[in-house]
Image 1 (tube, rainbow, N blue to C red):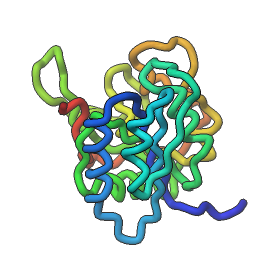
Image 2: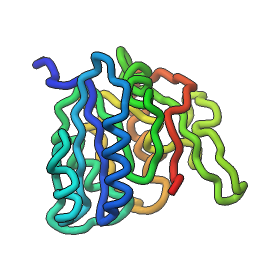
Image 3: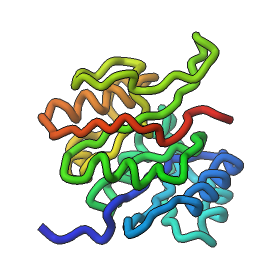
Length: 200
């Protein structure tokens, strides 16, 4: 097996949300990486010249789909995984807030395993407050109890399980993890919060 160029590929799917993307790019520059070798892929879910212009001056790589696909950017995530040069992949959506230790924590959770699971604070519309996801990892995937940013996955495994599969509706993150679990991966759960989802 050829050694990976990077330890971790960070994949951000976006589309026509320049303020969100600009904020995410600033957060990436504030990460405490130590010796962690990362690459950042910004994958637009369709043509987006504004996003391309935002990425041009920073050390991120810009990719785009030829046309908008929708469904929470699952096709963009798949393109990012296909292009990833890191040993592991994680997903930074552009509407999230990340702690400075987010990437090192996610990578440390996954290193030596196939999947690392960390925590995020997720806004609950029902409860009108933030709740921590996953609430408790038992090895069973529960709908509504996982978020994309909680996962760091070995790239070799991620490529076996496309995001873009039916049904194309809410809950794509827990369904993707469920399909990953069918491969009997080694999973490491680290109950540390790395950020907040849907803060904007």
